[in-house]
Length: 303
Image 1 (spheres, helix red, strand yellow):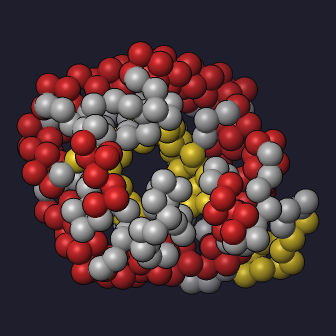
Image 2 (cartoon, rainbow, N blue to C red; image 1 turned 90 degrees about the vertical axis):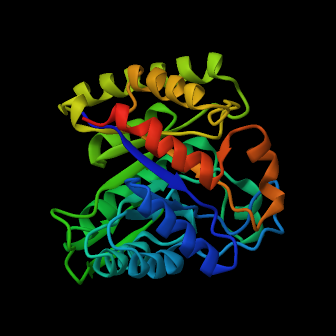
C-alpha cells in the first residue's frame, strides 16, 4: 500500500499567505493539505485563525490537484446537518478533492467560551457516534431522519449529491475504543494523534497498541481491517521529526511498521512567531524542510 502524506497548516491571517502555502504543498507533490478546526489555539489564543470550512471553500477553488480538508473538524462546533451541507458544498467546489476528518473535540476552554457543552469522554464519544452516523448517510445525498440523544433530524434532504462516490471519504479521529468502533463502522480512515508531549518511546507503542485494538474491533464488526487507512498526526508527541532527513525517514518507517498508512505534518507559518516553539523542537517543518522531505524521503514509501 502506498503511503499518503499531507501537511496541516494553521490558517492564520493573511489568507494570501495560507493560499501560497497550499499551492506550495501542492507543487511539491503532497497528497493532502489540511487546515484545523479551532477558533483559537490553546497555547496562543491571540493567533488570528480563519474559520475552517469557509477557508476550505476558497482553498479548494485556488488549488487543482491536492486533496483538501480539515484536520480535524470538531463535531460539537456544528449541527451535523449544517456541517453536511458545508461538506457537500466544498465537495462540489473542489470537484471531488475533499476528505472529511472529524473528531469529538478536546479543547475545553473553546467549548466553554462559545457556550458549547464540554461533555465527559463518554459523552463526547456518544456525540461523535451520532454525528458520524448522520454524516455517513447525509453525505451520500440521502434523506435523513434521526432521533438521537444529541441530534434530531426529520426527513432532512441533502443536495447537491456528492461528487465523490459513494460520498466524500470520512476520516475519524479516534484514540479510545468507543471512537475506534465508530471508525470501524463508518469511516474510510482513522486519525491517531501522537501522545501529547511524550517521546517516541511512549508514543510509538501506544500507536501500535491502538492499531491492534482497531484490528480487533474491525473483526468484531465484520470488516476487513486492511480496508481502513490509518493516519498518524505527527507533531503532538515530542518527536524531533524534522531534525534531519535520517530522523524523518526513521520515524516514518517505524510508524509504517506499526500500521500507519498516512501521515500529516505541521507546516510552519513564518508570519506567526507564536508558533516558533514547535519549529524549534523540530516538530513542525519549514518550507525548505518539507520540500527536502518530499524529495528525499516520501518517494521511498510510495509504491
